[in-house]
Length: 110
Length: 110
Image (cartoon, rainbow over all chains, first blue to last red):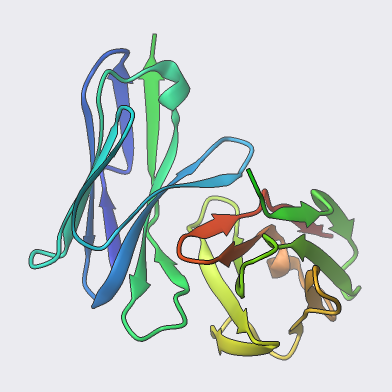
């Protein structure tokens, strides 16, 4: 079983829609990251969370430590949001390397 | 904004050849990482490095791999005798609190 599971695998939305991507994990963690990977391959860190909620522009990330679940929300989606969104966890007691989910391919149509 | 850089962006090599992938982490960061992503698969942890030594490594990081910080700025990943299955995108990352990823080196082993 994967330690980090994301859903959905693929998501297509119309411009302006509200988008939610989910992440569940099965290990103890000290933090959870949401990352964005563009078609060229580069990875950008969007959020690092250990509790609660964070907001940056149109992006909102939440985490529920008890339920081992996190969500990434995008409000008023735009075609430039099209990318792969990856959930990655920092396992408790590790040297802080990340364990990655398989990613969610988001396509926002104009 | 400071960033992690990697060279080369692409490398093609023959099976059995040695390759060195180079990274320049963000200057005040102390923790460094190498990850890889085989085409179509999720990102996987290879190795973490702190205080001039490996702090953790994965099962992937066998005797064919080595890392070095030869001077105050570079952080290198060497693959001694490349195999076809080493073809992947290799990401370097460094962190203070949040991990910052380099743009990656796409390695193709023929």
